Image 1 (cartoon, one colour):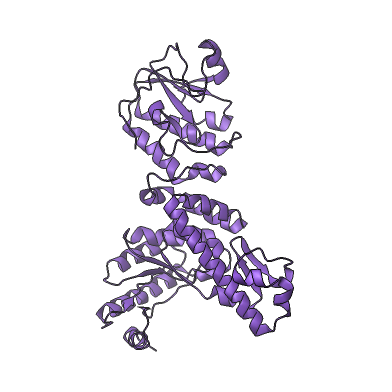
Image 2: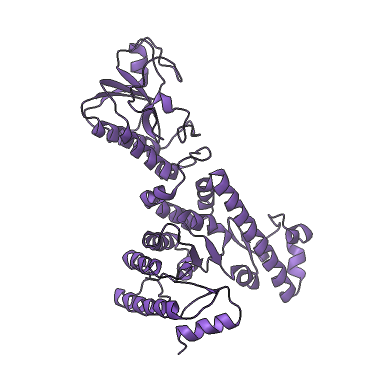
Length: 411
C-alpha cells in the first residue's frame, strides 16, 4: 500500500499545488464502527502529512465522518488543530449523485462547526452549477470536479436549473460561445468526440458563469436570494435549502449584519438568519408601560405609552428602526403562515424580556396558528377594531406616538 509520505512526495514531484494524504473517504450510511475506524486511519494520515517535508506545496486535511454529524464535527476540530492548509469535506459525492443535498448540508455544517471560522473549506467533487450557491452559503470556499467533462461524455447539458439531455433539447437556453454558434441539431450531428468536447466547453462556461454570479451576489449582499432561487430548480435542492435553514443559528454567526434589501420570496424566507438576528437584537431594547404592537402604523391621540411596529416575519420593533436593515424588506401582500408565526415568536420574545410591561397586539387577520404563539398576557385586537377605537387614524406610516425603546438602535 502507498503511504502518505510516498503519495505526498509523488504529488510534490509532479508539481501539485495542493496535495492530499492517504485518507479514507467513508461513504454515507455505513455502520458507526466503520466510520470511527476509518476516521482513525485518516487522523494518522494527517499526522504523517504534518511530519512530511512538503516544501512550498499546500496540503489538504480532509474532514471525514460519513453521515454522523458528531464525527464530522470531531474530525473538523482535529483537522483544524493541525498545521495543514486546506480543509476538504470528503465523501459527499455519493450524496450529491443521489440528490441527497439535505444530508450533504448536514455533513458540511457539522464539519464547519469543528473548523475555525477562517479555515479555507474545500468541497470535494462539487461541480454542478445548480448547487454551488448552496455550498457557498454553507461556507465552502473551493471546489474541484470533473462534472463538466463527465456529464458531457454522457450527452448531458448543464444548467443552473438542473441537467438536460442533448437529445431532448430543441433550443439551447444559454448565450455562451458554444450555444450561440451551434443549435442542438448541430451538436447532435457532430461525432461523439467533437460533441463531447463542445458540451464540455458549454458545461465549463455555465459553471464559471455561476461562480461569477455567486461572487457578485456576495458583494451585493443577496447570496441567500440566489440560493432560494436555485432551491426552486429541483425538489432535492429545496430539501437542501431547508436543511441549511435548520442551521440558522450557525449561519447567523457568520452572516453579514447589513447588506442588500431582504426579499421575502417564500415561506423559507421566514427562517433566514436575518430574522433570527432581529429577534435576538430586540433583547437589547426595553419596553415600558402599555405598549401597542401594530401592523397599521402609529395612531395619533392614542392611550398607549408607546407604539411599536410589527412587520412579519420580523415581529415588533420601535419606529425609529423602520428604515434600518432588514426591516426595509420587500414582502408580498399575501404572506404565508410561516411569516406570521415568526412575527408571533418575536412578540413572544419581547414579552418574555419585558415582564413588567403590558402589550396589545393589533394584527391584520393573523392565522390562528400564529395567534396561538402569542402569550396569553397579550391583549389581541383586530387592526380594524383598534383603528375604530382610536378615531380611525391608525394609518400606515403615521407620525404620532413614542416608540418607547430605551436604546437608540438595535444594530
